[in-house]
Length: 252
Image 1 (cartoon, rainbow, N blue to C red):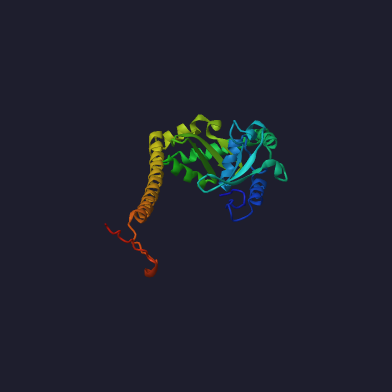
Image 2 (tube, one colour):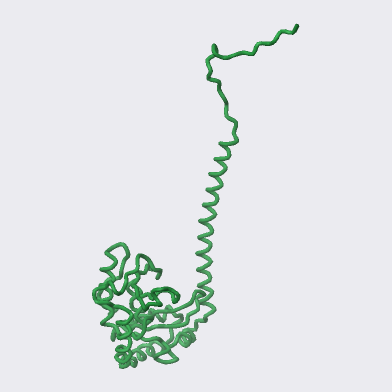
């Protein structure tokens, strides 16, 4: 694949801030992205994301931006790094300027991306994952956006040949998530079913661990109760000579 030559961030293996800066230096000025979502589609390839935080949070309301490392499953880990603390200040204001510039620059590469996708679809792959693998052979990454129920609601194409990023719906309806899924013969219900199966598997694993812990707790409790209620043999350590015997009173 023709992506920029910079290693993925491996949390804990190198200083976090230095690793983030290396990825940003390689991506921000080389790729043509027109939104934060498009930028994050590229950054995620390197286990990084630009995060504005919750819409109700102070970071979002003050137009702040932090960069966060991701694990291999896409979960945020580690301490966030403020954009303003990085030497070249890749803040939200900076990115918004890039969005406008890139929106025009990348238009000339839309046709070549369409051609690559059309070539693959001459004989449509049998699944979305197969479609993704076919794109990778053409040096194009596919970011699949789906909700918690496993429903795919968007596709983002990252063309490493031209360093351009496009949402499927922006280059034409026939390249959107809905159209590609239909061409691949994949139904949303099947994707949702697989996602639910994985959720249930994760849930079962969690329940199993909880049950094991519960059993251990009960065993510890029973041991403690056994110690408390088991009669203990008592010994009288008072020397025999010092023991006092009650004398029976004589009856008159």
